[in-house]
Image (cartoon, rainbow, N blue to C red; front, side, top):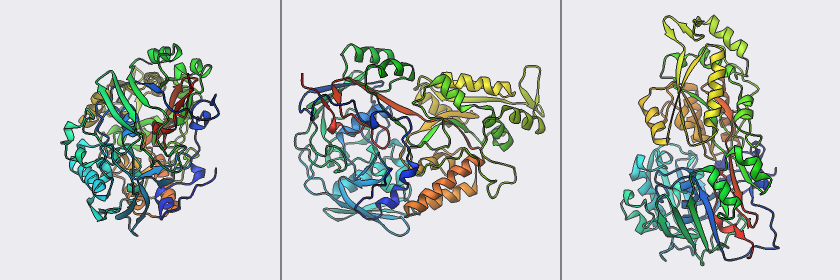
Length: 554
């Protein structure tokens, strides 16, 4: 794969990743839509696209329903930079170029002229400042709050130039500006109270579509902006969308989405379940891409005594067979994980071959390959003895763990029931506690858990910092000074190769300390009808703007 270099300063450096590290696992149709039956795109027509959940909020930076929310809000707002899915590099969008100071505490963006918000207001430096100040003020109410740690403000240098300043290094910020959550909104939006934007009426962006209507739990209808002409030049269509209208229809049941696509009631469906892949693949060209960020796996709550022990963590990792889990619950579109980061993440490194004992550790460590006999022997040696019920105990404490998980991905239950069985064979008892996203978050906040089954999609290795840094918002309590120093290091690096190398060290450290057990990557799957073309994923493996999508003429 060839590395695509960008024409402006430090973009390759901050993008933090080499093309060699960005293998796109499980891709079909190259991440694009089905083969065209016409020689060129057709203008006009409407698209009905099924999502699984109500978006909850149409505020781009609000807390909504994850991918289903982002699929819609991505159509309404543009970002300062665009992350190229092919290699993870950052390229111009609303900003024509940017630069960073030596310690990555100040970022200057030169802005594109001639751009307007959908209400006719001109896009300028003040709008960028207002958007970023608004996110910082929203705090925990905003999904982008973590990107603004140490934020001291945005300076309007002139109408076409802004400087974003931080009190501490934040080399991850340029990457963050490519996200939907940092999409730039108009003054009328930031003047509206944050909590009053959920219905989308106050959300005014520069994006290729505008909101026509939102009916909760039913649908969101968007209309094409005919004057849109400032999409990323590197994308297939930088101008106005081909489609005149897009309806995001809420269809919670996967089987209903599949049946409605097959009957012609829907033009495309998202969140295709692995169990439906064989059926749909025989009829349609699926659009698939492995998600970047943290893969699905087991996280240890090291604030709890039992799993704060490296011997126990490593034994658990050795008792779990990731390939068996993938083969049982999923299919070959889902890659068996070989690192805490997915293979489409800038900075990804394969840690499955093991690593030397990390500095600062006084216990033998290394990547824990599947070896249940070694797991049982290690627990025996550590004094964990099996009782009559098959569960081990030590000094009166049973090796019985609580594992919390979310019910928002169908195969999760199958995966976890198999993992529960595998751990039971070596004498580790596991109680599974499921719940919706709010219930799961409440469980995490309570601290009453030993293991969590989760993933986190983001096209930057910095996604790991929130969980694995001792100061992270979702810290697992590892208190690993070596790991903390590595996160501090990556945030201050301006060199692409240096930052990528540091992410490699971070992944190796997490593997050596068995802070996480990688199991499988998440692959997102869209099924478009045979007359629909040009639907693609962005670098974050979420639906990209639909400017390049079109339908065959009737």
